[in-house]
Length: 425
Ligand SMILES: [Zn+2]
Image 1 (cartoon, rainbow, N blue to C red):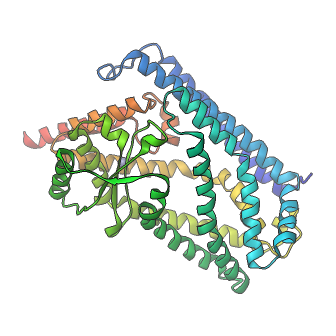
Image 2: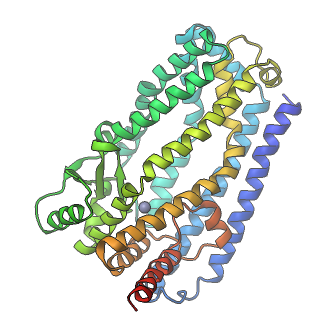
Image 3: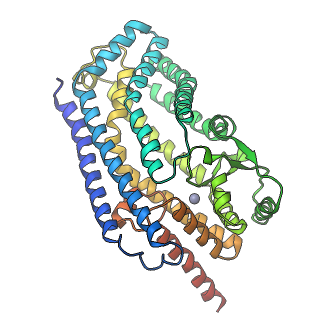
């Protein structure tokens, strides 16, 4: 059993995160339960009581499941940090695959593969019980297991060469390796943004160009009026796995794609889908993907700086039971466990930024359409069909929500009309 100041500090970070998270869930659950009997004012026009109550039950079940996963994660991480199992797996990996860069990269994937197996039952239960219970699951066992296999294959195809190159820099450039690693990470991030819609997404879903007709015509006309040069609008067979609906904008430069879920097209009118597209164009016009890449770049530089600091002495890894000169693999493994105790407190900042982006995109959509009604009704449908929580506790949503709540978005959109009136009058 490894108990010393380093393991204690990491466990304390993870434990504090778990306690705070549990309190947040408790406050939020209590808050929404109090509102279960009646539909909150303002929502009764588009949602009926059984659907509203179903959305609360869905939120509560997801919350309980998330708390259970959090508890399991904490226990599992403490076990990994203190039992000596990671040093044992690492030594076994090096013995099997060798200690050269290739052997280290293989060991890294071998350990990650074993650790990830412990999470598959949770994913399985969520898909085939939780989602199924509320009528969202459309996946089959075959699709589920094929998805897992593809994910492993992709992480090997992309992750293995990256780890190999980083290990090479680590060996040859003892002072500047972390800056090289960061550069590789950035190049990878940008590459992924470009190739995701072209190569990754088609592995999981069928992308079909939107067929000619009224909808396509309306969307192209909107693109023209907002000077958004699109050639490609796709529909995706999201219904293959889930009844949840969505739309997103992906890629940068001439590789940008607009992707609409088939479930979204089923649920919405042409004008509502146009509003959704206008919102996505808003993200593009305000350069949100670029902003996110820059913010992530700065944060990851900080992360690599911490890795470099931890790699410069032996005290850190020795406290965790690693007696080895090949420190890169254990360093990244421990770092990836401990870092969630820090990023948890930074996430609200990212969520705040994301919510601001959503407001900007909403505002753009309202301007582009010259009215707010289609966007409001599309947001209402999205919330209703996805059983989204309509009344989260303000502290919970400020901490966790990447999108403003429906009510916040409606208020912001309606205030735009008031502004317009003031201008006109
Ligand atoms: Zn958005």
